[in-house]
Length: 183
Image (tube, rainbow, N blue to C red; front, side, top):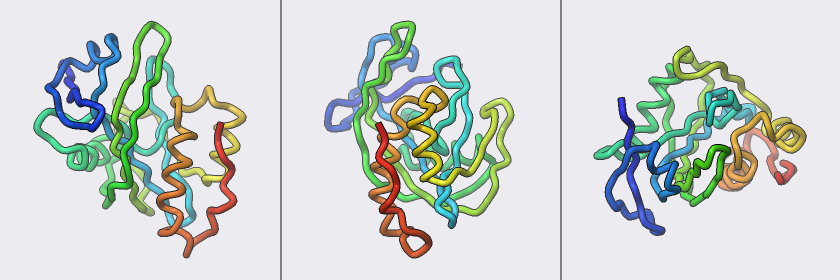
């Protein structure tokens, strides 16, 4: 099945669609999403996924909107399809990133970032994901700094922004102001 992505301008206005592979080969700006699900202990649900031909740890769910669907709805569907769980999510922010991979591929994407909280353990789909774990944010921050090769590029930077946005909601459970900054 050929996957398409939604091309966007700098303001995230749709400009058409193109095959995902071609968007990466040509470094074209397209729309995607990124979901961060935490439990009540302020642990982030990470998933190990094949990312650019290497198994790396990533935030809970990442992907691209389908033509005719919103990022929000496709994120909810993908959480269920890949992790076998439901979770209410809320929009936090969007950001643009430009990541170059070996082999000449470039991910130039406007990512819509969502946040959720759940105590549910995933029932991962083995064809989609290799593994999952909940990880304390402070431990994660230190591990990203010590072993960045084990994580998707830019996870630490986006995690900084997510923590700033959700810390107010989670401060009742635990103090997040001492979370280390990422490189």
